[in-house]
Amino acid sequence: MSHENTNWSQSAAAVCLREGKVLLARHTYGAGNGKLIIPGGYVENGEAPQDAVKREFLEETGIVVEPRELIGVRFNTHDWYVVFRAAYVSGEARSDGEENSEVIWMDPQEALQREDVPDLTKTMIQKAISGGGWESVPYQSRHNPCSLYCPV
Image (cartoon, rainbow, N blue to C red; front, side, top):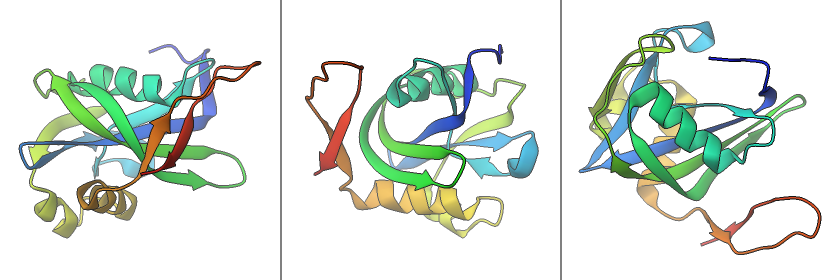
């Protein structure tokens, strides 16, 4: 993984539900070490958050997803983090052997009860299950590529 093109202040993730299960990855580093979290990662310079989600899911889990509604945004003084609900497209769940030690499909209710699932992941799972969110609306900017999301 190359880091010279990484935008360290922008990150994106998604909750992918398939056949009543949520996809989680056990992190191997940082504050999330040992925790089961929703897949995601940093956005590369010039990359849209939706494209970062697709790339990160494929790299980290072997799963191809299509980001749908935006279900969460976290801002602070130095960065932002967006979370989508994502549709499963294809692939078999597997660990990348680097950023995670396992990738599993888990019953969402079990995930919400586990101590090794962080609160932010639990909140995003709950939002994905409950429906709603903000959906992509066609929008054309004259100057920069952009995306517009509005309430469903």
